[in-house]
Every structure is written in C-alpha cells, then in structure tokens.
Length: 192
Image (cartoon, rainbow, N blue to C red; front, side, top):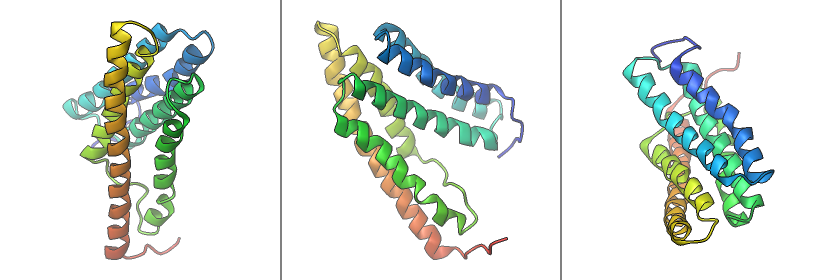
C-alpha cells in the first residue's frame, strides 16, 4: 500500500457507507420509507464507486482503506438482505445464501494466517458480483410497488440479483482455490 494515513477522503467515504447501514435498516423496516431507503442505497453505491476511484486517482490507497471498503460492502449487503427479507421483498433463501458465502470465506482466514496473510487481494469477479448486487437491491426495493416502473424494476432487479449471487459465489469459490494454492505453495509461518 502506498500510504499509511488513516484520514483520507476514500476512507471517510467508506466510514459514511458504514454509518448509512443502520440508517437504511431503520428506513426500510420501521417507517417503511422506501424512497428514502432507496436514496440511502444510491448514496452508498456512489460512495462505493468514488472511494475506489479517488483512492487510485489521488494515490490515497491505504491498509485501513483496503479493510474498510470490503467491510462496508459486506455490511451493506447483509443489511439489505436482512431488511428486504424481513419485508418479504426477497425470499429467505436469498437472504441466507449471500451471508453464507461470507461465513465460508471468513472460515478460510485461519488457514491464510498460517502463511502470514490476513486476506487475499480483491479480484474483478468479486467486484463485479458486488456491483451486480448493489444494482439489484435498489431495483428490487423499487419493484415492491405497483405500476410499470415497479414491474420493470422487479425484472431487472431479479436479473441483477441472479447474476450477482452466481458471481458472488463463483468469486468465493475462486478465493477458496487461491487459498488452497497458497497453502500448497507457501511455507508455514512460525508462530511468534
């Protein structure tokens, strides 16, 4: 990483996304203010795009940013599937299968640590899956109404959701293969 600074614009954007997680859940569950919840999802998607773009453009990548960005993504995905699942906008199998992939990957971390790693670099497939899901959820929320716009949103939302879930799990399986290859080709780090 090029910078060890903690306070950077990209890191602040990631923190904003993390702060928006409970706001989204409250909006979608308590007052069922779908328009405001949709706005929060849009802001989250824009800040997700901007934090990576700005980090690269202004050379503000950092170790903390490499942790904050995926944590914010996972928290938002978890919050959205819980919120949409509780509202019966998405089926419970979808609300379970997405976090299950993250639990699966988290179970690989102890194996990585035996080789001196705490995580693997994010690859394009994982980013594409997250992008697909971040498009799917606002569309599915918008599709929870009536009329032509809601019908179209539901169709496109489910298209993004199906592709997003498939890519999300495919990316997870590729990460597992990377861990397996790393274990086979790297010496164990002695315990300190």
